[in-house]
Image 1 (cartoon, rainbow, N blue to C red):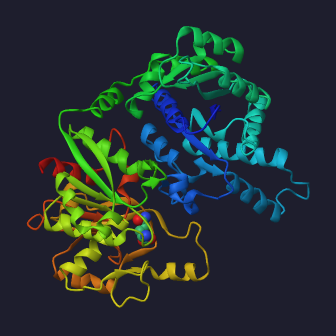
Image 2: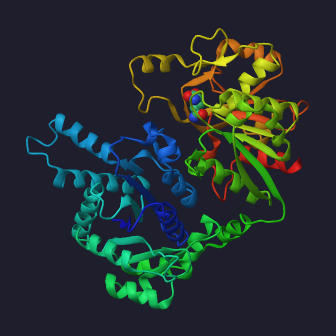
Length: 542
Ligand code: GLN
């Protein structure tokens, strides 16, 4: 049987529970344990696919097509494991399953109750994920904050599992220790309250990770230990760090791996984070900084930039940059500016590369198309992801292939030249109003054409597998015209019906490539994605 580590957040959200969970996973994996990680989100939404990215952040897509929270991406990156959908659950998903079973008479006529049937389903899913991964250790992150009504049921599942297996469950509380400006002192009281609130659910933290802007001093550690009822050495300092990839290294400084093994009665083994440390150091590479601009629309919320929306893209760029021994500085450019004032496009010249990420809808699209035209004509390296590839095809159709009214059916369904059109099966789903989990989702094979930039980037592989999330595709009846005008579809579905990669040959442009899939989902710190690497190389050349 596996050991379980539950991670719950105290005081407030947004302090890095996902990264903390992932880091614990990395530490334990580097001790040679088989580790898997589960995210529990307290939403009614059955998956993250129907949530607005400006509210919820990036929608991360798993190989099997489940649309999840961005933390799943962190787990995959830190653990270097491909996780299945059983490793993600929301309140909605859990209830959906319990109700489905009740309808099928699987509870054999008994009353089905919120307690214990909902926590029992949570535990069943945890054990299924454990079995599936053949895990020695399962790490479970409980979304939200202790004290919230929403996640009580998941804390109850934790309590029930601990009651069944008292020596196999560890509870970690990630808390926040503020230093109010006007006081100038680190205050532990919110952590004490969070700890008591946790106690009221029948749980006691075994370890407290104390997030703060600076490291904890011994006095604060002792205070937290005394009032939260744990050993002082089990209060771990978690100060702000320059890179999220430093977090496992920092935790190890405080002996977190040793402590968790101690709590769980696991054999003590050395931690080998050498490769990780070398990578983390490279992410801070200051020698050559590439200026990469991400052009899109989901950037601002009030006065704040929402970079969370593109977290996998940003991390994939960091991985590729580190492996190519360069640093990367990202700028977010709002494409609507180019619609208002095309002269602004000139600013694109100062960048080593331009990336257009995935997206939906009409806002800012004409501005993006203008930007794509500018980088094509001025030979600035371009990388388009999903919508970025579709808009690249539209730009090419309008300005090179002689289809000036080329458009996407997503914006203009009745346009004459929908160079990007809705996939036939998608049309039916939309007509029936079925939006949840109905896009073309998850991993599909992609065949690579010989002598192309894509094929070279992928080490001359004939076929690769990449993750998707889209409803629209390159219109089959536009392919010939685009190809004749010089666009190369270097990646296609095995039946050659769906265009997966569009590129310009090297003779025409140093790097102009777009993918219908989302390569960013498969980039890993120690294994950067080949196309991101190729883009970074081209940008470095510029
Ligand atoms: N909106 C486009 C589509 O649905 C692109 C989706 C995306 O970029 N993820 O096909």
